[in-house]
Image (cartoon, rainbow, N blue to C red; front, side):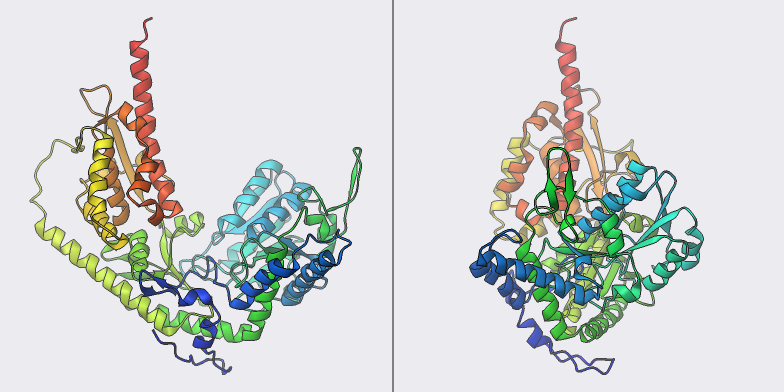
Length: 596
C-alpha cells in the first residue's frame, strides 16, 4: 500500500502520512506476510519512536526512585517526573500542575473519584447521572459506590442515532443530583457529546461533573478551565503514550477535601501508630513508587502530538471517517451503528445479509492483516439499547491512510460475498425438511475425550498455519448439528463469550452418567469451536469429562495462541457448564453407591 497526501478540509497544511508512519516502528511489521493495517486505535494507539526512545533513555541512564533521594540521579528523575506533570497541565490547561494526579489510566482515575469523593459525600437517595453511552469503567465504579452509600444511578438515554437526549438529561437533573459522569466521546459509536452544555446544566443544580476524556484527548484540544468540569480523566496509551499511565484532573478545592484513595509511601506528611497526616497535592493521591517512565513517556507523546498539531490530526481523522463511512455503507448487507451528526474517528457496524457474526468479521479480516475490534466494547448497556450483542469497529489514528480504509472495505466486501456464497450453497444442498420427534443430540465420536483429542491433534498436525486451521474450524462449524430455536432460551445462554452462544446439555435418557449437548452461536468461528467440544465431550461419561484437561488440549493443537481472552473465557464458560452437569452426575452416582 502506498500513502498519499490527504487534503485537509479545514485549509490547514496537509499531513504527510508516509512521514508520520515512518515514526512508528510497529507499522513496518508484517502480519502473516501481509502489511499491518492497524485500525484499533480506540482500544490503544501505537507509539512513535520519540516516546519509545524517551522511555528507553530513562531506564538506560536516568532511573532512580523519586522525591526522597538526596543523590543527583534521584533528583534528576524527580525533575523529569514533575516536568511531565507540568506538560500534562499545559496540555489540558489546568490552572495548577498539582491538580493533575498521575494514575494507571482512566479506569483508576474514575475509581479514585468514586471511592474518595463518593464515599465521603454521597448519602442514601443521592443521585449519580451517567449515560447509555458509557464504558463499563464509567459505570461499575459508580455502581459499587452507590451500593456502599445508598446512592441511586440514573442514565441519560440516547436516540437511535447514538446521540444523548439532552431534553431527558435536563429532566433527570434535580436537587438530589450530586454528580454527572459522562464520556466526551463514545468508544463504541464515536459520538462526540456536548460536554460543555452538560457541565453547565449540571452546575445549575449544584452537581459536580466528571468527564471521561479517554477517547477525546488525542483527537481535539482540551481546556478544563474553559469547560469548567470538576474532574477530567484520560489514559496515556490512547494518546500515543505508554500503557499503565493516566491522569486525573480535579479542581484543587475538591481534591484537597477528598480523603486519600490509597495509603503508603510518599503520600504522607507524618506517620505514628496513633495517626497519620497526609501530604499536600498531588502527592496525597500518588501512594508508592509511581510509573515514572510512563509519566515521562506520556509527556513525550504530548510533545510529539503537539508537533503534529491536534487540529491537523483531527481533520485528517475526520476525512478517514467520512471516507470509511461512505465505503462501508455502500457494501450490501452492512448496517452502520452510530450515526450522530458529530463523531470522532470511530466506525461501528454489523452485517445483516447474510447474518455474519462480528467475531467472524474480525477473524476474517485478521487473516488479511487488518486489526479491528469486535464485541461489546465494554459497553453492554449500550449494546442492550441497540438490540445487539456486539459490533465490529474500526477506529482511526493520525497514521492511518485512505488506502488502509479502502483495503478494509475491499476485504470486508469479499468476506461478505464469500459468506453469501456459502449460505447459498448450504441452502442448495440442504435436505428436504421432514417431521422430527425432537432434537438429535450427538453421540460419542470416540471411545473417550482423550481418544477424540488424539484424532483432532492428528488432523491439526496436517494443517501447518492458522489460516488452514481457521478454515478447518469454519468447515466444522458449518457441519455442527442444528440446535432447534425452541432450545435457544435465556436459561441456555452462555455468558462470557464474545458472541451469542446457547448450550443445552443433558444426561442421555436411559443412562445415568452419559452427557450430551447441543450448542449454537451467531459466529461461525465459535460454531467451529463448539464442534470441537462436541467431538470431545458429547456422548461421553461424566467421569471422563471431568478428567480431561481442555486447556492442555487447546495448547497441544496450537489454538490457544489464536484465541483472544474473550474467546478463551467463552470456551471456559461452555466447558464449565458441562463439568457442572458432570459433577452433579458424579455426586449422584456416589450417593447411590454409598450404603445408608
